[in-house]
Structure formats: structure tokens, C-alpha cells
Length: 220
Image (tube, rainbow, N blue to C red):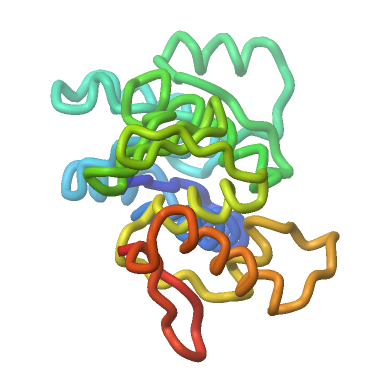
């Protein structure tokens, strides 16, 4: 689980990003200004800080500079959220030690992709996961190894398994599964999930995925 701190003076931005990042399985903290954000940072030690550039009081560049000058947080990932395109703002942010930029209005899927890239770059998010001792999921190659045997799963089966295995023990609700695996633009029935779960169980074992009646599924 990755700890993420959002520092932004706009409440709707904090709520939007927090909601989407929690759905990805991250632990999220929020702050409405730089001073509160630095206080939370020192208490919670986040792995990544999403930092608005334009804020009253301490702006994002000042906050980032303070982060980089605090010994315990010199290597903490910092990603700026900015609606400003001026070169001087970006140069100032890079000079302060930012790792990346995401332009506002923020598109959650783009942000999550950029965050994952940052985490992988720092070795904090592996492209290969081992949710159990006999199952390895390689998200780059879209293959699964079960007891040393390579399984080439259809794309949706793979994405469903990768989602469930990303948080062992966590119950994924059916509507979340549909959104994450099939998206919001494609209409599929509830039975679609059940059919894919049945096929996965046939390939990786009946005991790997548990049905939580009336709610969804979890990987165990």
C-alpha cells in the first residue's frame, strides 16, 4: 500500500483525487494548504505528495523546497498539480526538486498512470507481483505463472485477476470491478463477471478467489 498526501486548496480537487486513489488501493491523506500539508507529512511519512502550485500562503514551489530541505523527506516523490503553463513556473518547480507535473484539470486515469510510472521508477511499484507463493503476475508481459507453468489468459481475465490480486483480502464490489476492468463506456451484465471468475478458478484454483455474497469478490 502506497501512502499519498494531496495538498491543494480546492476541496473538490482533493475529494476527486482522494476518491480515485483510494479505489486504486492507496492510503490517502489531504491538506488544504502548505502548512497543514507539511505537518501531515512529518506525521504520516507519505511515499508521494501531490502538490498544487498555486495556493494562498505558501505556494507549491515553497512547500516543495521545504520538503527537499527536510532530511527525512529528501527522496519523497513530489508531483505538481498545475494549471499554469509558464516556463518559469516549471523551471522553478524542477529547481525545487519536483519529480513530475500533471496539468489541471486533472484527468484521474492520466494521473494514476503518471503516479504508477513514478512509483515504478523509484522501485516502489513492481510490474511483477507475487500475490501468493505459487502465483506470479507479470503486468508488462500479460502472463501469469502458476506453479512454474505459464498461463496465457485472455485480456479481461488477466485484468480481472490483476485487479483482485493487487489487494489480497480486499473485497472488490461488483460495480468497481465492472468499471476497472470493462470501463464505463461498455455495457455488460453482472453475469459477465461471474463467467470470468469461473474461468479463472478453473485455471488458478477454486480457493484463490472468494465470493462475498451480495457484494463482490476478493483474492485470498
